[in-house]
Image (cartoon, rainbow, N blue to C red; front, side):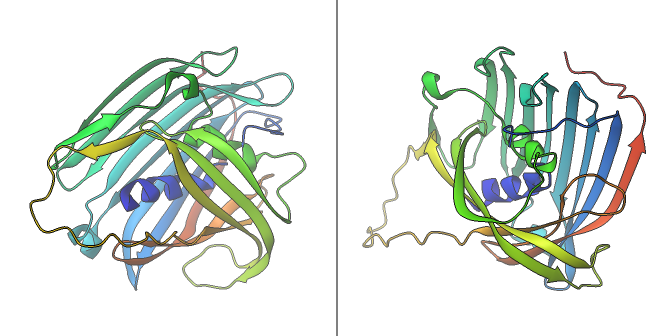
Amino acid sequence: MHKFRWSLIVFLWLTSPSLAAPPKAPQTIKLTYKAYWGGFVISKVYGAAQLDPGNYQVDISYEVTGLAAIFSKAHNSSSARGIFTEDGTLTPLSYESEGGWSKNSYRNKVRFRKEDGKIISHDQDFKFREEVKYIPIRDDLKYGPDLISFYLGLMFQDPPLTNWPELRHQNVFGGFFLFDIAYRCPGMGTLDSRRAIYRGKALVCEFSDRIIDGRFERLKKSKKKKKKAKKEKQPDPVKIWFARVGDLDAMIPVYSKFAVGWGNVRVYLSEIEVIPGPDQRKAS
């Protein structure tokens, strides 16, 4: 599951569709993050959000390179389009995600109904080295928000993102899986690293995810003698540090640390560019 968890973490810089305040003027926000494993850069994450008071389009991509590619040649490209409604909430219209690792690949293409967020079409495909059967999400659970639209809302949340110790939950459609994402922001921290373009106070938030529905089952059972099953350890919450950078009127992630199957990865904001002006690609 750490491949899907990696994809989820990549989306954490774009944040819930509830209580979202749309941008007051058209703008494009471009962010670049560098992911470090030990002292090596193993990936760059590129994100671009084109926003105006009525529409949004977000594109994100990454690829694991260097020494880390020995353990996981993971890559992903994802995009989401939708609208800001008159009351300020986000309504997803489409979501696409494709990528893979090693000789495994996957693809999801989803369209949502504007009125209620129900999924009206879902095209998906996967090729895995193991022979597996996909048990799909129940039809009554196929609704938005998608992963990107969920996280985009936190960026423009009104009132702004701030301390809250209690857990909040949101069901999120992630293509093959329906997630329950739990999150809270218990306190402040101080970021001081030469790897980051931002140094100073930041709000520390914790995120964890649990699959509610949708799963893969192996078709071929192992012939090896089965060992006594061990209780799977629940992974620690992923910590994301949020701060206001430059003149951007939003809280954005500036640092994150999380564990994957081959060690700890630290992600730092390395570049930011805010371009005013009309969005050339309108959601429809």
